[in-house]
Image (tube, rainbow, N blue to C red):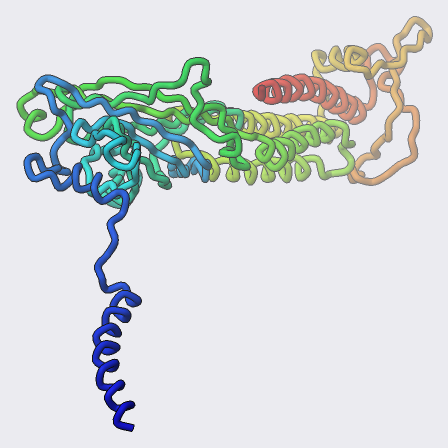
Length: 459
């Protein structure tokens, strides 16, 4: 027993001294391990002699200019709202430049030739786009600080971010709905002019087509035809320079979104119904006078066209610069139907004149010219006197025009040379039929010309 106690007294202190080290090592409290990037980050950003300053432009030689290459890729076209002229797109925006302070030899730092860091820890350009329709100034500026930047060993920096832009796009409605639109998104620095800052479009690889849009970027209403970029230098007056009359030059990069409207919706739901109504108006000149519904028929079509015209005005910008093609067609269609209504009233009035109204001699010549509009008169040589007759329904004195009678052959003239024509009432009716035929031909030619004109506007 004494021997056991002696052994425990000798072994226990050594176990207690070893146990804390085991626990400490197992719990990882010996200190954090260094990453392969720690030495590189300390070399670039924690240099005691020349510490990195994120608010200073990376120009290391006097007289040099900082060159920024700007690029943008269209991911998806969301909407182009014509009444508000607002373009909404999903894009990837990227800027590339060189920071002379962020260079290193990869062999000295574990062969690391690039790494990713938060944009707010380095200098980046203060770019904005002019056509912004965002709610406040900060949203209108392109804020790179929330994105990541990739830095390469030669000092090159790639800074990009995905964003949803809402920009103003002036709509040209002259060719609506067969129109093409051009929407610009222009980037520039808010404070830096061309004296030390130059913003240019990204250089494309030789033989590569300059297109900055995905094939699937189009939507159901617009087809994306292209998204080229252009760089330019423009004069701008800001701040005190504007008061003093001086201006400075600022470099800009503009991306032009080229859109072509898919006009199938407007053709099916607006153009074709209107065109159908204009052709249905043609039948008013074929309807007999006795039906009594000719004027009501044309008026109903005219009101329907007014409703379609309201639909067109609700889907285009309220602009006084131009009238759209579709609007011109609707106005012409309304004018044609209104003209048809006037012609119907004229022929209707003439057809219902009674025998108390004597027909002038000039109107009698029109009756004899009916053959030129497909209404030939039947001539009978009878005792060297011309007798003209045509098939129609005679009306008796005081009879309602809508009363039906059996068809009969009624002579337009008698053999009495003094009267030259008999039954003035029937002559007026036949004159109304001739006018209907003449108006039908005129309306058919005009409506056909207008229909061909609007259909040939699409390409």
